[in-house]
Length: 521
Image (cartoon, rainbow, N blue to C red; front, side):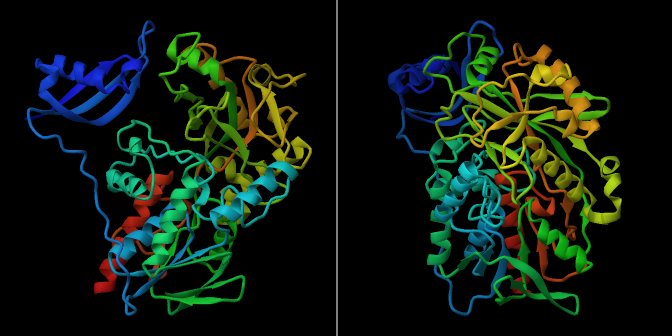
């Protein structure tokens, strides 16, 4: 007999085979010896009680019959025949990589063109950005093999349940080396230290099957004939030809948005969210969430999710990184963008999160002359203001949370994980009024919701501005093609159809399946 049971266990018991077996037996009213094994299906933390934190487990229990390990999905990545039709994929982020893998399953040869470098070479450019303030516009935290997620955490949590098969995406990550924990943790996370190896394994699989991956091939134009895309051109002077082109360039590929607009290809300004990255000492967040002075060895660093309506707009936490680091995520000189990431162990002494305000057409109005690029130029303007306020060299303007709310310059700043360094500044001169006024109101409200959140020990670092694409590239709901250009498939976060690694991966697979269906017509 196989039974599924929900258990509430102490943190010290959550990873103990004996303890889980005993709890399952008690819940089912049987002897522990009758249980031949179990599979952990879901694991989450319940910290609602002020007296005790628990793990909540969903367990599949085998009773008096042979135990069977969790079934794993299998994936057939066979060598492509020389006659296989090809498709061009612009961008080697999660949308592009998962599109390529799915194409191989469908018998289509993917040709990936990535403006940046492979993960190993890319790491050296990130080190230069952190240590010397030199940004490579084509190889940074946003551009390069694996996309923005490779060196910014590898969070796999998504609410996009209707966009595709989340379980399939997680199993593919496991197939290429991710730990099985991502299959049952409520908020799965790989870690910046481990994700590059998984991305490399995916690329090697694509190449082993006959697909192509070309690095440092920045696409600068589409080849269009009679409203049909037939290929692309790159800055290096190369041309690539195919009847299907997947545009999976990510949310920071401004040059692509400009190229499309100059070519009079239909694009639209899109609302996004803008704000700061907030960093607290991790122990303070642990104390607030776990109601204890010491987390202990059996609980992970605590996280949080906060949202508040202030003057008709949402203010919310974004990309929360327990035990994490704030990183410079600019893609061009003279602009300052910050993001956060955590290693797999999440063992750094700080907790950081984006704290952002939704912005819309009323905020873009001063840039209306740029038409569909208005939101993009608004975003860029704020990033330039932040760079100047920090004094250059990617030193970030910063302010203690309480000083920000009480409208005073911080005379000193707390220790921070941001390597290029901080400069005390008035963030009201960096952020638009619609943003900083709502942030001030939200921080006070969050302090009432979460003990000790509103504190002088928290530092605000500007700017968190790449929450999503400021441009949407429209596509037909039936064919997934651009409504003007046959064979062009806007895809993933950069086109406005995803918001993170998993949703981008699912969108890439969806595009690949559409191309597979079109190839059979």
